Image (tube, rainbow, N blue to C red; front, side, top):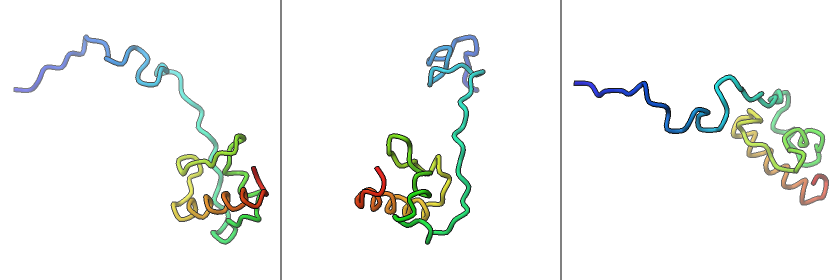
Length: 90
């Protein structure tokens, strides 16, 4: 015998769901940069390219937003950290 489902009861999380937004409100996605470079271009001296993957506060964007392959993301992280050490970027 299947379990009874209570469709008349409200959700435990409340009327707005888990994050506090209604279903009609949608978050605008962050624009993802296009991958038009090679791993060799991910160098600490290429500051203009590296700044695309850093926020205004100086945080490195995760793969979720950069849409880079893992191999590229690892090289990107190393290049940004080296550029910071050399005081080429903040």
